[in-house]
Length: 182
Image (cartoon, rainbow, N blue to C red; front, side, top):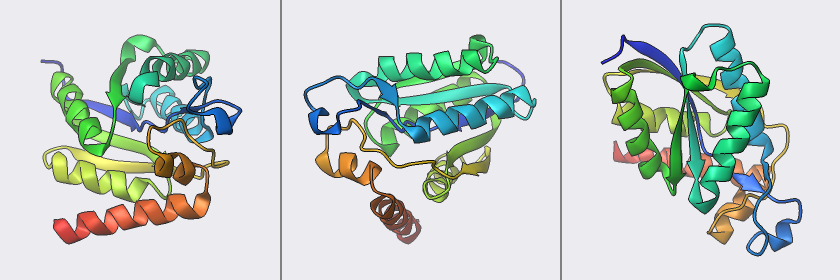
């Protein structure tokens, strides 16, 4: 097993195409703004030696394209891609943290910096804190430059991603549910 490491975790914010009305008919072609910003922030943490590894989460059946776009962006920002792991095809928070757990164990990660939108970070932070009690969890938030309709199987999730108010309410409702449960 490797030495104890620090990693940045980048959630799967997904992809979109430019014609959101055709989201179910046309394959997505680009990262949403949240993905771009989270990848940029993670690259900066790695380039500043605050983390040693980046964990990229990707979602649904378009995960391979999302992974390639995120890795291309990281490479353009000077990141050595051997320091990047990809979580493929997550469908919800549970599958995302289960897959993150395997990477945390493989690389003996003792500290995770979650790189997430300021409204998403409290919920992701709480989930990681609950699932990984022996790992130091910290947050690195950013303000999403714009909200975009996301390529997602569920209509509610597509619409939620494109509306700031719905995004905030969704994340706070799920955070409240977590707090009440645990």
